[in-house]
Each structure stands twice: as structure tokens, then as C-alpha cells.
Length: 127
Image (tube, rainbow, N blue to C red):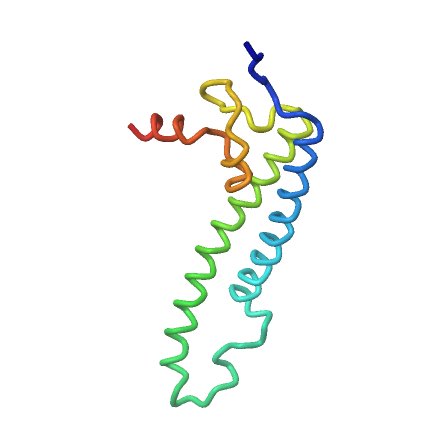
């Protein structure tokens, strides 16, 4: 009978780390673009429009800022989750289900690299 793996190998961890680093870079770029919308560093504001359309554009600008704020908040949470995953890789605890202590399937980690629960544990947690 084959012995059950208790952790991913260093080679597998390096593979996950590369994936996470790529996703982290993309997430930081996206966060930066949301942040620019919020702080209006992109130069697209109603300041340079004629007064007639200003009130209409301010409404859409506000909505856009609110949406960007919400998306930036979600992106920041995602970035933190990815950074935490990198810490788990360094500690060699990456990929271990925090509820069961068993390995999370590699397929799940490739799809959701910051996962700390297997699909089964996540379903159980929602009950």
C-alpha cells in the first residue's frame, strides 16, 4: 500500500510559487489601475467638461469610483491571500487543508492557488 503524501515536494512548491508570483504581479497591476481611477491620476475627470454635462458626468464618475473602490478592496484581499500562500510555501505547509490536514488536490491549487481548503472542506464549512 502506497504511503499518503503529507506535503508537496520542493519541486511542486516551486511550481506553485511561480504560478502565484505571476498571479500576484497581475493582481498588483489591476489594483494599481483601480487605485488610479479612485484617485483620478489618469486625468479622466469631469473637471475639463462643459458645465452643461458636468452634473451627468459627476454621477457616472461617482459610480465608477465606487465600483473601482469595491474592486480595489477585493483585489487587495486577493493580493494578501496570495502573499499568505507564498508564506505557506516558504514554511512548506502550502497545499495542506487547514481543517483536515490532508493535501488539497493539485488541480484545485492550480485553479485557486491561494486555497486553504479542499472542495469537500469548503462544502462542509458552508453547511
